[in-house]
Length: 407
Image 1 (cartoon, rainbow, N blue to C red):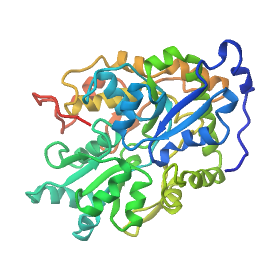
Image 2 (tube, helix red, strand yellow):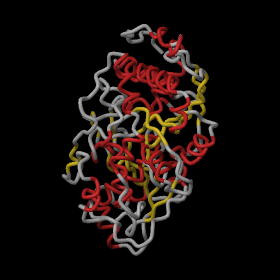
Image 3 (tube, one colour):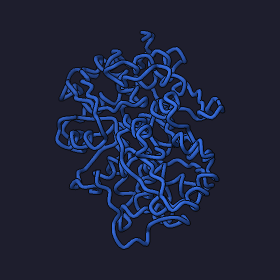
């Protein structure tokens, strides 16, 4: 790694003494073997945490369910998280009692993909139209994997399928597979496709096991993806620690996005055995926004994986949390409309984030709501999430029973 860290706007040593000192200096920090864990790995290993009085003990997890359980037990203090995982725990969806959770900041945007198997490619199922025709003509349902029942990948897969006229709960089967096991499941013929983070889409292509049909940023440009999460109890017991952790990760995020050199050195770091344990050529191209779909098409993506973007990535927008709850409602994971605004206000740690960002001289968006146009042309701006959930042609709101989301 290069040691050309961005210059701090304020001396971080001012934050490790007196009343601002972290209450807890050693943090057990969970992450998954995913490219978008980069800012946590960089923060822990490249000197960004120590100036704030923190030692970050990285702990790689085998699955999102395991990561969730260790967060709730206290074995992990904080972790890379799926937006939908944290909200599901907060709402009591998915087999765990409700526990108040906290989104400290966004870690990444973009950079996930929907990938299909080599047999489907050989059969000519290489477009949304061909997939829709295959689903309608065959009596045997295709099986698609995602990484957690309420997670981002389940929601991207559902949203994209529905936008193409394929009902994700009726027309196909959906199974949960940890991201690092996706390619093995493709190879074994257990699944016909998957939605997951990198480097596993690129790795499927490298192993000639599949191809990329679409990316998550094609569904929603600059969509929210991974977050830094913990329990609400952790924030309340260790507020200085939580703030210091956000500042350290913000600095690491800013460092990664500062130059291509930094991105390349970060990709090299990630490839190590203790982190992603994956060849660099499966990580670096898409980390730099350089995509190939495995069918001969290559492009420089206009909305690549990003970690900072002058703080746009890191703001825990209320509207981002609201969107995931609207999708839970759409697909029957919530039987009734929650108090959308109140819950998002509890989970998204806006005040803590604003305080950390302001001390680092990082721009803070004027509004906690943002507006986006998704692949189906629908505009999401955070207003009327209950109406938004009901506005789709394909949904499961009429289901009389709550869908199973056991992890």
